[in-house]
Image (cartoon, rainbow, N blue to C red; front, side):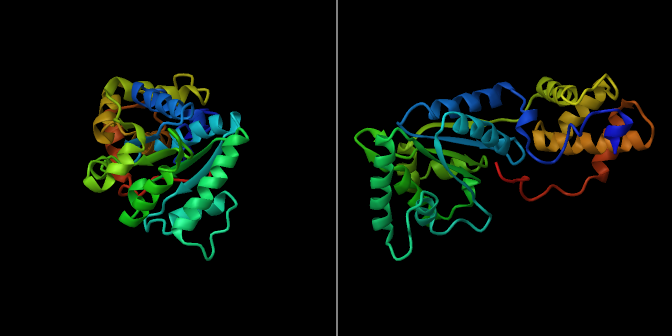
Length: 278
């Protein structure tokens, strides 16, 4: 393992999203600010979109700490590739409302009453959905109705929604007009530029007691940037493989050729980001 060879305290480029390694690029910092804004008002949901590997799951885990700190109630779902049938029932059951034998209209009525009671008791509830692009058209219709529950001008359960970049096209369709009306902010997190890629690599190394060993040479940084297209998940995989190869060869400098060799050894891109519990 390259961590031992370079005397690093742990793997700086591990595959699992880890909020400890959160890097505040301008784009990620703004996304986090919008999410925090969404937790301070009741006017609508926040939708964060971006490419697979851009760091949406890390953002979720980061904002989860604020939800816990402020004693806010979160109903959280990771939508699997096959979708999430019975979305309204699933939300109701997470809030302790029996769904069996009830129609969607009955569940929405029970949800509205329950959420209003929680609000009167000083509790605010949010639905957090990761991988929203996997929802079917029917489930998106349900989501619109759940997010549309309100008393007066206040949304009873705003959403913090995370989806791939293509979901923005879905959001623009006439069928998703109600979802747009339920939304306060829709923000796209873009890949890093070259300078941000370099800063990201060094940020993660510094967090594991890096003492300038190994050193990524300037052309190696450029090669990582071009091959990863500035997407953090790809940067992690590429750097981990490059350091594994460099350590095996006894190298303390990572050159562009090292990065190219590592890239050739990597398996095909995974079909989905690594996920796990908050």
